[in-house]
Amino acid sequence: MKKNFKFLLWLTLATLSQFSMAQKFPDLAKTPPMGWNSWNKFGCNIDEKLVRETADAMVKSGMRDAGYRYVNLDDCWHGERDAAGFIQADAKRFPSGIKALADYIHLKGLKMGIYSDAGKQTCGKRPGSQGFEAQDAKQYARWGIDYLKYDWCNTGEGAAQRNPREAYTTMRDALYAAGRPIVLSICEWGESKPWEWAGEIGHLWRTSGDIANCWECEVGHGSWSSLGVMNTLDKQAGLRKFSHPEKWNDPDMMQVGNLPTLGENRAHFGLWAMLSAPLFVGTDLREMSEEIRTVVTNREVIAVDQDELGIQGFPALKSKNIEFWVKPLAGGEWAVAILNRSDIPQTFQHNWKNHHLEDDLNGRAADFSKAVFTIKDLWAGASAGTTGDVLKVTVPARDLLMYRLKPEK
Ligand code: GAL
Image (cartoon, rainbow, N blue to C red; front, side):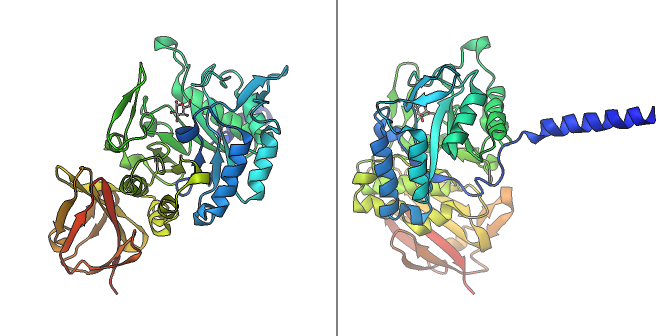
C-alpha cells in the first residue's frame, strides 16, 4: 500500500513536472529586441536577395555593432505545405530555401526571424499555423530560426474566434517542444489586452494596431485603420506598468527612415527608445541615407532603450504642443526627451529645480534642489550644461530633443 502510494505520488509529480516544463524560452529578451523587419517598407514584395542584402547592410552600416541582431521576414515568404504537412518557402522568391538564408544570416553574426499566424491563413492569405503548430515549430527549429512573429488574422469571428491565450500558448509550447530557443512576438494588435496575460507566453506583444508611415494620421483600410506615429504613441498611455525585461510592450515596428523629415524620423526613434520598445527598423537598409544611419546607430539613444532596468518612460509634463518625457535609468540616471508635436518650432523653458522627477511606480526620484545633474544632449553627443541652470531651448517642428542626466559627483 505504502509502495503504491509512493509510486502514485511519483507519477503525479512526474506528470505535473512534464506539464510545467512547457514555458517560454528564458533569457532571450533581457532588453528589448532590435533588428529589421520587411513589412513596413516591402509588404509582400520580399525575396532572398533582399534578405541577404539587408543582412549585408546591417553589418556595413554599423547597425550590427550598435546592437541590432534580428533580420526578420514578415508575411508572404510562404509556399505550400508538403505532403507531410511541413511548410515550405515560396520556391520562386526563395529558391535556396530558408535554411540557407538563416545560415547566411548566422555567418554574419546576426539572427533570423520569421512570421506566421494563429489562424488558418496569414493576413496576406498564406498558410497559417492553426492545426500545424507542432510541425511549423519543428520546421523553424530545423531551419535555424531565432524569432517568430505570430499574427492574428483569420482566427474566426465572434464566439467562434480562437481564444488568444490558448492560441499563443499552443505555439509557445510547440516552440519549446521543438527545442530551439526562439523569441515569441505576439501580434494580436492589443485587442484582448495581452499585457494582462501574455507575460508567461511571449517575449513581447503588440499593444496597438499597425503603424502608418505618417506623423499624425489615420489611414482607413476598410474594416480597420493604421495609425501614424503620434496616434500610436498615444495608444501606449497607461501600459508602462506591464513592460519588463523578457516581457515588453511592442508599439510596432518603426517607420524610421520612411518618414519625410529628419526631425520626424529622429523623434520617432527617440520616443521608441523612451518607451523601451523593441527597435525594429522597417526601412530599406540598402538605401538608407547617412542622416538616418546616424539616427538608428546613435549609441546613446540605443542605450536609453536598452537600459538594464527596462523601465518604460512616460510624459511627466504635457502642454498643447510640448511633451516632457522621462525614463529612469540604471545608476540613478534619467533620460529626458522634449517632444514638439506641432508643425512650427516651439520655445521651451524648464527650471529643473521646480520640477522633481518622480516615478512612483518604480520608487525612483531626482530632486534637483538637492542634487545637481550633468546634462548630455544625445543627438549632438555634447554637454548641455547642468540642472543648476534653467533649460531654454527651441524644439524644431515635429522633432524631439533628447538628454541623459547624470548625478554630479
Ligand atoms: C498585420 C501585422 C503587421 C504585418 C501584417 C502582415 O496583422 O500587424 O505588422 O505583419 O499583418 O500581413
